[in-house]
Structure formats: C-alpha cells, structure tokens
Image (cartoon, rainbow, N blue to C red; front, side, top):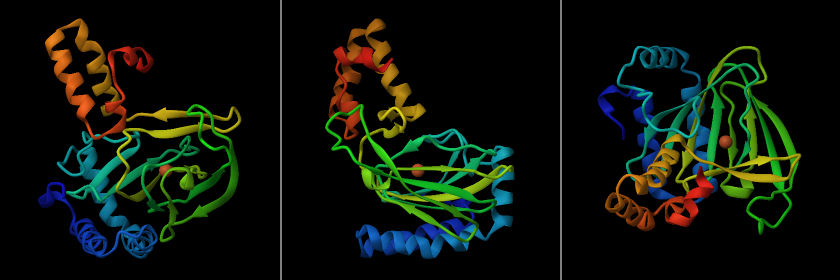
Length: 247
Ligand SMILES: [Fe+2]
C-alpha cells in the first residue's frame, strides 16, 4: 500500500478486502463482481472525500498530487504492492468527457457526487492496422452515487465517460492489473482512427531517452539498454531510429 499512516481507514480497509479477495480468485468476472459489491460503500462516504479533497488541496501527504497518473483529473488513492489493482479518484468539470478509449485492465467506476454518463463501444475491425479502428456505439448508461459501471480490458471495454451535469463531480475507479503496454488507446470514432495516449511520466522518460544522445553518448546507451529490457512494451519498442516518431 501507499503510506498507510495517512490513508483513511475506509480506503485501507477496502484495499485489504481486495487483496484478500483477489488472492482467492483471478477470474475477471469474479473480481469485478466483488468490487461492484464493495465500491458503493465508499461512494456513500461524502464526508470522507470532503476531508480527503481538502487535504489534497492543502498539500497533505495523502493523496499526494505528485503521484503519476494518466489523466490530469486523476488522483491515486491506493496501489496494491504487487500491482494487482489500484484505487483512483477523478474530478470531472461540467461537460468534461474522456476521449473514447480502452484500458489495459478491467475496472469498476462509480460517482460519489453528481452522475456519470458511460458510453460503451464495440470494435468491428480486426485491429490489424494499428492506426485504424472502426467503432460502433453499443450503449449509453447514466450512473449515480451508489451505482457502478464496469469495463473490460482492451477491445472488450472501449468506452467514453463524462459528466453530463453542470457541476464539478467526484468519482472513484478501481482498476485491475494492467497489461504492461505503457499507454492506452484513444479513438477518433468519426475518422476511424486509433492513437496512443501516454501518461506524462512515461512521455517524459521517452523524451529523456530522446534527448540524451545530444548530451552524452554513454548515458544515452545506458538508458537505451535499460529501456530495451523494460517489461513495459512502449519502452522495449524504442530504438534510436524510432525516437523521431515520438516527438
Ligand atoms: Fe476509462
């Protein structure tokens, strides 16, 4: 877990229950069902999250806004030590929607305030062209505090989530263990395009690898070697010839 002394008991307790439950099953359906039973208990705790957001605003050590996240409206609340799951909070401005995207893991999402709209898509192309994706809208659902929606990994869980209300709202997401890609896919539905979305931290590491050859050949070689051995796919893909594509 993250620094436990600072983490509210309710969050520690949920994460401990997940550790226990996920030690007994690795079936995605069972893990999703478990989280869908547990997350609403946290979604009802407005006082807890009011205090938590105040703490974040006042630079308390939890949640630490410096922790790396994929999106700028996201805060990490709990990361399982063996990365089997993470609990995250999201803040949504009025009318803010994610791009249509996939995930490398399953996930369960639920609002604490307001309501969230979830649009699910079905992919109809075979994925053989990395930059192309043909998506068809499958369903639109609205979820309120105490309710959850879930997503599946990769093409089975392509979706868009947003805040259809005129107030800024707060939500929770619990994600399973992601496949080590180092990116998610975003989709431009009308143009039938797929593109990689890379977290700011990953992007910085890639740019460091890109900048180092101009600074020091030995340092550059060291970083390249490490990236080539890295378990995350996007780092292993790197070679000097590919640097140009990333900028
Ligand atoms: Fe998502």
